[in-house]
Structure formats: structure tokens, C-alpha cells
Figure 1 (cartoon, rainbow, N blue to C red):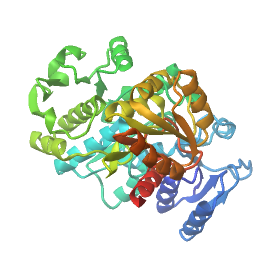
Figure 2 (figure 1 turned 180 degrees about the horizontal axis):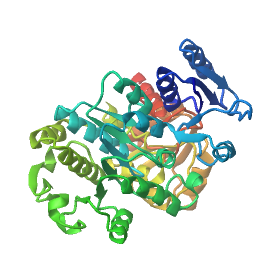
Figure 3 (figure 1 turned 180 degrees about the vertical axis):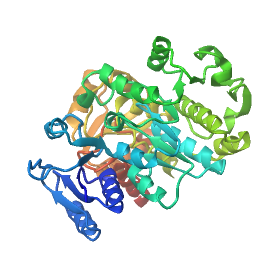
Amino acid sequence: MGKVEIIGLGKSGIGAAKLLKKVGKEVTIYDARESDSFRQIKQELAQENITVELGQNLPLNPHNLPELIVVSPGVPWDIPILLEAREKGITTIGEMELAWQYLNSFPWIGITGTNGKTTTTALVEAMLKAGNINTSACGNIGYAASELALESLENPPQWVVAEISSYQIESSRELAPSIGIWTTFTPDHLERHKTIGNYSNIKASLLERSDSKIFNGDDPYIYNMGLERSWKNSYWTSVKGKDFLIGDESRGVFLQDSWIVAFGELIAPISLFKMVGCHNQQNLLLAVAAAKLVGVSKSAIAHTITSFTGVAHRLELIKTINGVDYINDSKATNYDAAQVGLESVNSPVILIAGGKAKEGDDKAWINVIKQKCKAVLLIGEASDLFASRLEAEGYNYYYKVGDMANAITTAQTLAQETCAKVVLLSPACASFDQYNSFEERGEDFRHLVNAH
């Protein structure tokens, strides 16, 4: 029986372990962290004969080497233990690549990009389901890809719709979607990828391996890369009209006279789409392009456009209290996403920001804060950094409140005092200082708001 070792006890690591156990492998999960919730998971997995080792890194015992190491998305691809494993000839892959090995007989739609991935993925999934296609979204959204692979052994999908981060692409060298979508590109994850060129090349590699490629023509970086690389078999989208497409309009999806036009066919008026913001219209056009390539009918696409209200943790209206909208944008984990979130809501705004800071350029984000925010409530590790940055840019209406509970209490008071229309959680940060995930952070916000 083959021995497999997995790094990371998150959703992906557990999904990989269950899949491998099902196909007869001996599985151990390693995680350097320890907590009560992890110890609980360890006990539960022991019932399934999956060993979990907490508080320690994966050992490479020369007398008992594994045949395979599977890496969760949050684990850097170039840590010493993985470099050593590859030198020793041990196959090392990401959890997404493992899932691909079991799901590659089905066509994939692979969706990547700095921002917009989750909404685009959810829209594609909804359109395919409206067209009676058996599918499930996986990756950064919903299922871990390995969970879907495990389920496919009993209930095979017709299409796999996968949200794929740069971390997952980096550790999935074979994964080749039938349709690849690139939503947006701005500097992110530079603490991991070091240079914008490395980050961009990782994203581009997924599209290069895709049979058909769909690009957001309104993103200047992607547009210029498209001109340079003249990608074959590509389709372009633009909310600005057909003049902003690369190539023939018959391969384009764009807005014209407030209508969505896809490959020469009128689909529906854009006014039927309920999500706010130009960026969401871009996400919609990318999804329409994919659905058309799959063969979903115009009526099923139009039905999705009218009924789709958004995804959890992305500009999600939780509740209106005394005329103030409380909006959860916990998925805004970098400056660009947080800027888009802030631009999309009504002002004046009380903004809740902070968490584990990422590298990047915050100036455009702070400029929008200066225009729209009555106050910024700072939580988590980034509080001191954000306070000094806001002050340096001439903005002094910030409060260090520590955690989410204090942020909600303070926001309620300030919203009444300042006649704010919106309290917006849009952190511009990762969540890992106070939470296990952006979802957990968003659920905490939801719970606290609903408790008031």
C-alpha cells in the first residue's frame, strides 16, 4: 500500500486525505499548528484511519520515504522540505493537481485572476446548472477539488468549474482546463511570488494550457499581455463595447446600448443584473462567454442574470439597521479588492479594515477612503501600519478597536453620529491573525451584526 504525506490540515488537506484513503493509500497529515479545533479534527479523522501529526513539520525519514507528498494551497511551494523532497525524487504536487488526476476525464473550466474569481466562478456554476448541466464549483470556492474528486467516484460531473489561485497553479503543472478564464491582474501575494513577473507568469501558464481562453479586455495588464502573446483560440470581454476587444467581435462578449452581446447574439439587458459595480459586470461577461462555449442556452443564461444576487463575503448585504446597510466584503483580502468594494457602495461609509497585512500599493485605496469614509475602524495585526499610513496621507478619522466585536459596537454609534449609509467590512488584509479564513471572519461579522 502506497504511503502519502500531506502538508496542511485545512479543507484541502482533509479532502486530499479522504480521497487517497478511499483509493487505498496510507495517509498522514502534518500541520505545524496546534489548537483545540485541530485536535478535534485529528480525533475525527482517526476514526477513518487517517493519521494527523500536529505541532510538527513533515519529516523526511530516509528509511521510510513517502511515494507522494501533497501540499495544501497555503503552503509555500519552495520551502526547504519540499525542495529536499524533490531532490530525493519524491513526487510533490498540490491538492488541486491531485484532484485533476482523478477528474481529468471530465472537461474543466479553470478560473484565475487577482480579484473577481469567486463571483465569476459562482456565476459560471449557476449558468451551467440553469442549463441542466451536472456540475459543482471547487477550489477556492465551495468544495475542495479533492472532495469533488471523491464524490465523482459515485456521481460523475459533466463539467468541473474550478476557482484556481496562483498558489494552486504553481503546484499543478499538469492541470489543463478545456476553458480558462483570467479575470483581473494586479500585484498580490508578492511576499510569496517575489516579483510581479513571477506572479503574472504563473497565472498565464494556466491559460496557456487551456484549450479555449477567455480574457477580461478591460484589464490593462491582461490586454497588453494579450497583444504581446497573441494567444490562439482566445475570447475577449469588455463592458466598454466592441471597440475595446482584441480580435473579431464575433469572438467577443461586450455591452452595447446597455445590452449584453455574446458572439454576435443579444442575450439580455444589463439592467436585469442585480449586483453592483462595473467589476461585477466584467465578471458577468466572462461567465457568459464560458457558458456560451459550453453550449448553455440563451434563456438559461438570461435566467441566471436575473436571479443571481451574489456570493457570500463579497459585497454581501447582511442587514439594514436604522437605515444603515451592513455589508460583508471579507473576501477583499488585498488593497485592490478593498478599493473596488469601497467604490461599489453608497457613501458616506464607516469602514472596518485590518487583519494580516499584505504587500502592495495602498495609495489608490486610501484616496477612496478619503473621498467616501466618515471613519475607519482598524482591527487586527495591521492596525498600527494602517494608522500610520492613513495619517501620512492626511486622513485622521481612524480608531484602533482591536477586534470585530468592538468594531461593530463602535460602528453603530458612529453611523448614527455621522449619518453614514453603510458600515462596510472590507479588510484589505488576509485573515490569519485572528481567524482561520476570510469566511470565518465574514461569518463573525454576520453573527455580530445579526445579534444587534
